[in-house]
Image (cartoon, rainbow over the protein chains, first blue to last red):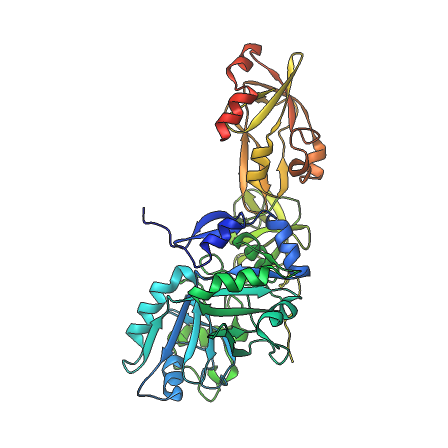
Length: 377
Length: 119
């Protein structure tokens, strides 16, 4: 077995009493002594600090070509508006394959002289290789290992973080800005994956521990593990790559049409021209029959990833599958997301999930389970 | 009180035993959100999966500690699974069972042996 990688916060996690698990090749904290439930509720109410250094950080730049050239090259791979992404703004996107499935989902920022892209931990090497092989040789793609990535999420994030790095009120959702901390540049974006207001910070590995220790000394912030990160994102209906997204599911099936700006859709100024365009543009017009849905299990039993769904309680007519599910600490009930094949059943039919050879009824509902609270203008 | 390697405690009371999970097990499981208990009258054999416990994180099973029959279950923990995190060796017992062979109890661990087991 290959040794697990450690993030720059490994020692801090241990000193905070974290319970560690292997995740995407890293030893990561699943929870701290507070436990998943209390960590989740604390983040919703006040603020939480997350180590997300296992995620990939890419810098895409060129010594010879303009940002416009890089953006045009990226638009051949990403079905989103990269050319229209203003300096110091960030947006969500994904890399489709030729069949329209998703190689990875990501966040991309325009940093003036380069693009900064955050990708999933489990997909770093795949994305890097794919980009390197499919983008102009005049463009440099660097997977940086010298910087850590942390997130501060929750309603008290701005107050707590501004005590340490200065005024943040001018930043709104998906703005990006550089700050100085102990003489080094840190990259701050008003973003995150909990559905709440918050910030993500890329900073040199060497500064990460002291930065986090100083944050944790303030009132109103607790360290949060991957366990609560998962329940927080699920409540807000955010997809987890490898569960809710994969190479056989298209962004339209996944309900991510909103991320494909009109300029790239049929009739748009820069219509198509990206990998997987045929399937994706067709599905935008026609509505797929296979799509991501939200479910409330009717009983108390959580229906988790991998649970098969049927339109009967005998397991005869399989109609879909749960891809993420668990207990919602905010709603104090189980919640699930998954995919339904609408060709195989009518929406007025009952739905049952099979767990341990038993059939539990579920009710279709709408995402998100818990409303988001981003700081928009 | 007797203990199993699967972190259950057994408290003998005449011909029957009361069964629950240890503090160590409750802590390892984390926040418990769902429990499914067997029906009263179920005959069980040692090692059989008879209880489902779900924490926020994951599902796990509890195995029958010995051969016997379920004679009473604690529905209070089904209504409020967090009881198991708060008082695993007291109020939050799981079930009572009659034993097929009373002598089987002797094969389980004492409290000292269990403490060594989890060290």
